[in-house]
Amino acid sequence: MIYSDQDTIAAIATAMSDAGIGIIRVSGPDAISIVDNCYLNAHKEHDLMFHAAGTIQYGYFCDYREEIIDEIMISVMKAPHSYTREDVIEINSHGGMLVMNEILQTLTLLGCRIAQPGEFTKRAFLNGRIDLTKAEAVMDIISADSDFALKNSQRQLRGKVYDKIVNMRKEILYENAFIESALDDPENYDLNDYPQKLLNKVMMLSADSKKLLDTSEEGKIRKDGIRTVIVGKPNSGKSSLLNILTGEERAIVTEIAGTTRDAIEETVRIDDIVLHVTDTAGIRDTQDQIEKIGVEKAKKYASEADLILYMIDSTRNLDEEDATIVNMIADKKTIILLNKSDLGEKSEVSENDILQIFMQENSCCNLCLNYRNLYSCIMNQNDVIPIIRTSMIDLNGIDFLKTAISELFLKGEIVPKQEIYITNARHKNALQRAYDSLLLVQKSIEQNMSEDFFAIDLMNAYQSLGEIIGEDIGDDLVNEIFSKFCMGK
Image 1 (tube, rainbow, N blue to C red):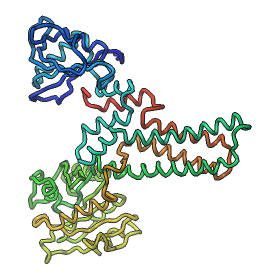
Image 2 (image 1 turned 135 degrees about the vertical axis):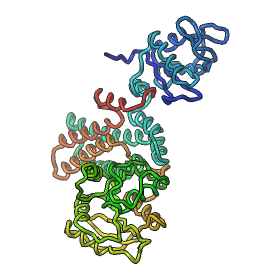
Image 3 (image 1 turned 180 degrees about the vertical axis):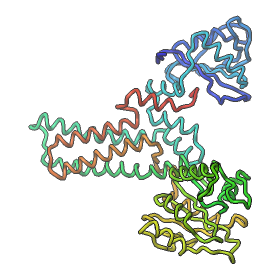
Image 4 (image 1 turned 45 degrees about the horizontal axis):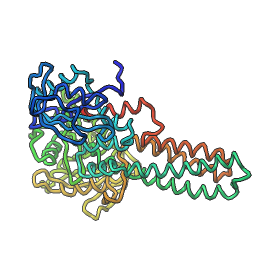
């Protein structure tokens, strides 16, 4: 089916569940006339066409036989002063799914088309009311699950990212226009001292791009959370840790090794950090076919994790199975938990034992003490691996674990009112291309190359930045971005 931007579209804009109030949104050139056909005011008259924009009307929604479906309130918004810059009607009905679907079905019979996911916001973008960064911020606000994610999305919706990108593009366009003019009319433009002036400008723009890029890793962590996987041998305390982090009995805990056969996933909030935690089957050689599947799943989850919580039963010596785990997590951010510290007199494992088994698998490990001496750690492939003694019985070490996670992933306190954080992978990729192009300009200047080369790379940077705000972007990418939105938005 071919969809047109001139169609009048309709969709349920509130959650797809029974509620006190539901909203059906209609947008397009025929929005008011279509809804007027099934709207009756308190005097049982069709008069929606005569009401002013920005008003709310009380009345009834009826089917084509003028039989009342529901008592409603209708918001009237007229182009261009609406969310989509088209005529928009929002029908506020009772929030039962049956009544909202009946209203929507009636609208489709009268000429509306069911909106595609994100089509209302897509029209706001295509009609010039918002740029692409603001459009994406709308979805980020809806899906935000932390205070940082919400505030950063709100700043993006207010145009913080847009303003920064537009200013950078203006600077680049000015320089490119000067070069083009000088090449076309060398008698009136002097390029003798220009390369040094351009170098200073490009270095400033490169620094701005790098500063934004440097926020992307922390911004993504703050926005999307940390994919965290608990690994270890059977009966090391993995499931107990999950239960403590979630505050409820999500996983079965017994004395029998191998209780966890499948992965259990939960979302946990630690201060303003969200952990998407997966408890996995204990990793060991086993002949049990079901447990084998669980072990393979554990390895797969570990390979995709941002953070590994490696649980070790400190009352048992390290063995070949631990070596297997160490090899599996060698390139991952890891925190080692020496569990069962409440059984101190039975403890068999020391920090040096851990260092030795890591050194068997990696040649660059060494033991150190930092993190304000809260706990030991080792260095593995230039990354810090904290070692924390824990007890799932008396909760010893849990606070240290939270501190260690913050230290590993966050560079410092975020000041939301002062900083722009890049949290969108598409924005990051475009910024990286712009940054690379600016570095090529610097290189060309330093190598005394022709000004033609400056212009080519400057325009590449300009276009890459334009992709962020929706300039120089293809229809396929626009459709892909908005297809990820929820219905009715």
